[in-house]
Amino acid sequence: MSATPPVAAPKRRRGPAALQSPGFRRLTTAWVFTNLADSALYLMLAVWLKDLTGSDAAAALTFAMLGVPALLAPFLGQLADRFSRRRTLVVANVVVAAVVLTLLLVDDASQIVWIYAVVLVYATVAYLTAAAQTGLVRDLLPDDQLASGNGLLSSIDQSLRLVSPLLGAALYAVWGPHAVVILTAVAFLIAAGLLTTVRVTESEPETAEERGSYWTELTAGFRHLAGLPVLGRLTIILAIAFGVTGLVNVAIFPIIEQGLGLPTAALGPLTSLQGIGAVVAGLTAAAVIARWGEVRVFAIGVALLALGMAPTMTSSLPAVVVGLAAVGFGVTWTVVAFITLRQRLTPPRLQGRTGAATAIAINLPQTLVTLVGAAILGLVDYRLMILVTVLLALASLVLLPRTPRDSAPVPT
Image 1 (cartoon, rainbow, N blue to C red):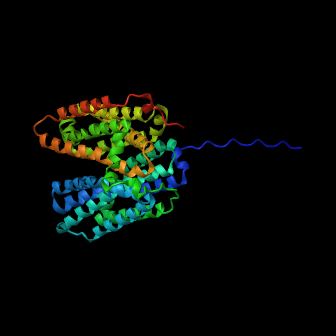
Image 2 (tube, one colour; image 1 turned 120 degrees about the vertical axis):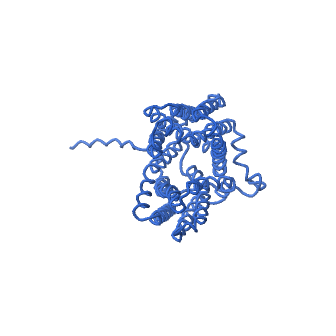
Image 3 (tube, rainbow, N blue to C red; image 1 turned 30 degrees about the vertical axis):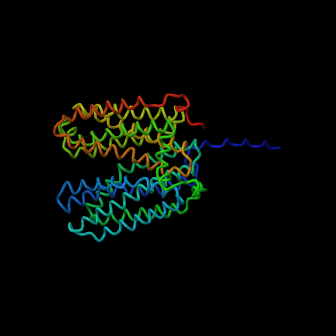
């Protein structure tokens, strides 16, 4: 009689826990295509405008246009919470593809107004899809997999920011801007097709009675963040720490030219170093959040962000390289920890509006500080601007919640 063969032990699943969800895997694949298109397009548009007009200001206005729709974020978050998130993402990607394809009609400088119009529509839809996606992720994943999912999406975003601009630049140089336009449209259409296959049981929208008045519904995201002490405090820290980095954004060329003695073309490689730190942070975020909790990881991220900027006051290239990698690492840990905590503590059908409120808390202060920094750059030593940034970012940490419950790790 033969012995019964031993039963093999099940293989331990490797990779991010969030990928156990088939729906999240489809969403992640769609995210790859939309990010590939996004990073390739918006930098190409700035270069295209520069070539059409010969004006640096005309090119720079592209980036300003990307930030303007933040003012519409509360309305866009409200839309994301009222309707099916999956259907919203599908329609939004199709609309973006159609709008971008109209750039094939642009041939000369007399049509640059249309390029700006496309950028405005493109950026507006991006705020809507961000609000819808954060809610869809919440519907797809259990609490203990949110950090894994957010970390993976962040790593993909940062990885493609390193690759996509190079792809866009190569297509632009060889075949012109219309080649990048076609690539972008096709990528968004593929993403829309993938999103139609996502199987998810979405949370039900609020009823009219639950929503209350229009103003109550519109401001619900802000009120929710303010009403929970832990989220309210962390939102204020985000606004301060990320807002003051607007001074460093303004000082970036003095840092490169005066501090390091390098040509302005060094901006690309230096930015890539920050991206590499961000990719590594995204891949490690879930593990450290499970061990230390979102609040502690958030605090470490802000500290790394602040301390990583300090070497830019020196003329040491190795120190600046390490510092920029630390900045990318810190920003990603901060954002992933905050988003994960916010998703856990927010009702399903309030996810879009709290996401929109967060976008305003980050983008509006940074935009205002950038304008102030641009006004005083010629009057103040750039190193003083960096010092102020470091000190204010670190000082914001005094607002951290102190209770053990707020800093508890995510239950697994």
